[in-house]
Amino acid sequence: MISSDDFRRLALSLPEAEEQDHFGKPSFRVRGKIFATHWVAEEGAVLKLSLEEQDSLARAQPDVFSVTPWGHQGWTRVELRRVDPALLEELLVGAWRRVAPKRTVAQWEASRSAGEPAAPPGSTSRPRKPRRAT
Image (cartoon, rainbow, N blue to C red; front, side, top):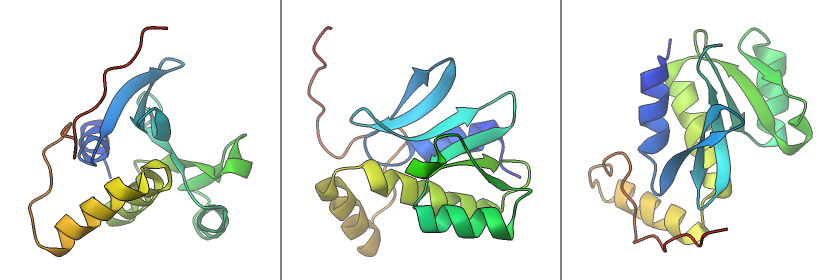
C-alpha cells in the first residue's frame, strides 16, 4: 500500500517536478505538463502511461488499474491501496519521463548510472525561469 504522503514524496523527488492544483486535486508537473494527479480522498492517482502499458495493466489487474475518460491519451487510474509499491514507482517515473524534457531525463539517468544520490524533493536540475503573469 502507498500512502498519500509517500505518493507525493515520490512524485516530487523527480527532477523539476512541481505540485499544482488541478481542478481541486494535486497534480504533479514538469514545466507545466502533468504527469500525475493525486486523488487524495479516493486513495488513488492518475498517471500518464503508454497505451500499451495501460491496456496490459488494466487487463491483468482490473482491481488496481482502470482507464479514465481521457484514456485515449494514456491516463490511467491507479488504486494506491492495492498497487505494488515498486510497480507504482516504475510507472510514476515512466509518466514523468513522458513529459519531462529529454535533456532533463538524460541528466537524471546519467546521475543514477553514476551512483549519485537522488535529488532532494522539490529540487531542480537547473534554475527555473520565472513565470510570466497572465
